[in-house]
Length: 196
Image (cartoon, one colour):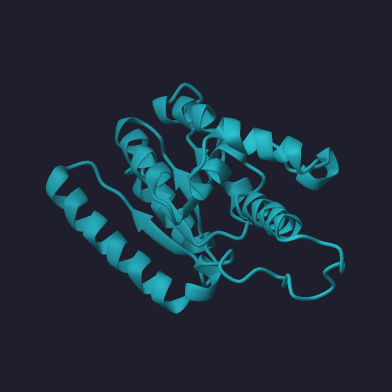
């Protein structure tokens, strides 16, 4: 899953935020706008995404993609100057023709990143443990399946920074079902230290 920082959340930024939020392989770590009343910041709060007014404090995070949606060349320049070697900065512009071209370019960049880092994109495919090891002799198939489900859910929570909404969406279950399973498998608060 690619970690994305969105800088700028006005009219165009909020439309983009909605698209990125629905993308399965994007984890929006924060949405930043210098205007604390920007529509996209409110939308991000509704999605459970951290927000702020200063992008500088997020640049130390492990970010794969920075989407610059302010249209401000100075902001773009600062992001390009301060980005590390593995972060891709994608400027988004407001006119439709250019935006369409930028989105196609962004999709191609994402495809290239997916090909390059496929193991990073599928962390839940290979669990870090295997059920055929250290299974108590008296376990039934039901016990083993429940342990696998518990571990799978825990890995998904960790992968989605303990955000229950995104975890439920990634697991293709309702948030209510996720809460039920968290209670069923007795997840402790300490297990979900970054609980959201």
